[in-house]
Image 1 (cartoon, one colour):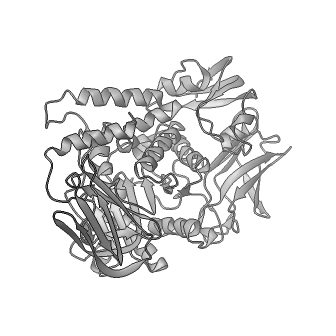
Image 2 (cartoon, one colour; image 1 turned 90 degrees about the horizontal axis):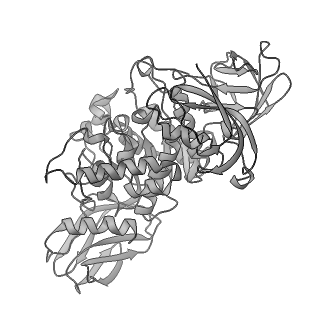
Image 3 (tube, one colour; image 1 turned 90 degrees about the vertical axis):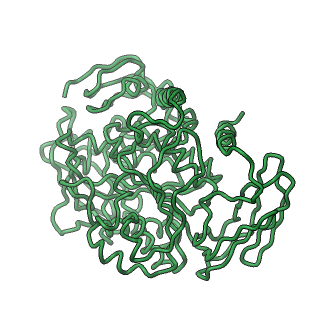
Length: 555
């Protein structure tokens, strides 16, 4: 039986006794916003053989409840409408939803920075006081856990008002304001975020098996789910926001019947020491959600982690996580990156001012989906050309590269064959970056913004910062994620270079997937050989299997 069908059987079994009343999932309620410009999928339950009639916006559709008590109807695509209308569902009983708008619906998910409430944000009092726009609607899903998939929601859709705004998520609400102001259509936000969560708890559990590099993660999730099944009914044990399935079942599953314009994903702090493994976990998360939402092209906007000290940890750990986020975006045509190197607070993992980030996310969305200003995209390095005395870096979406403050470009480093990085000078030439240092006559490696606190001044004409990057002459396609020829051209190619296993939270399995040997954590490993298999995506270093020989270099 298909994985998703098995998961749906669980929720049907949990539903218990059949009801005579026609039903729809609780994510549908008064004051909701329905997604415009797509065939609208509406579904629910009733008595087998019951005739269902749905009416909305001048459309009338009928169907019959099947033998499993399920019904589904599709409406023709609807144009945006700020007029509140009634959606009616008639069966043996009648169900009505009042003041329903049509516009764009966004799912905002992640951990504490997405959950961060208006009342705690900079200018929170003013933000709440101005909430009188009935074209913005929000559904705030409160933190919850469940051992089985469930549809129950504690709250329903609301218009945002001065009295309820303080408890809303600050970033989702400010993003809704930006999009509504720019597009002049209703905006609906479903905020299903929770503090302190890892990406695994949000992921559809069977999706781990779809990513070869996550075999160990899949086995862990399956073992944990089996262990939780032995708990006495209604009881929970351990750190619930760290266990698989519990958060997914209670906070993601209930919204799967809904349709969205896209997903904003702001998470990574809980996985910040995993390096390129995080790219694989993003692949599992997005693949599972797209399957459940019946939308293989569902856009994901990945918010890169901003500068923060991370309690004195190695300054190179966070850049590896940022590279994983960027690598995922480069290998997923329906994903986009939101660079935040200028939006952090080194002393606070929860920056209080969420307005600049909301504006940045809106700029990327407008550029990608609504033909807005392309300068909303961050310049992203695509290729490094190593010359005798300098390195030339080419960008996608450079859009007028410049120095933000008029000072020399900073956070640029190059290294020679000795592997020691030195500060370098950068010159902008026809939207390319030329990097050189008198201390490195023959560069073989280059990196930019490669520090957890880095706030580089390389930006585009609108002040949007360039994404951090790292390239290596001998393994350019891996380090920079730049191989545009596809994975089949990798097989059998020679490779000599370095990999890094994280100093914190390293899994031996992650290292083993690289070189076929068990490597110790907290080390830099030099490997050589031929590529014999590629478990990961094109243009991504993680998941490539290397063989023959290796040596470990202590840092």
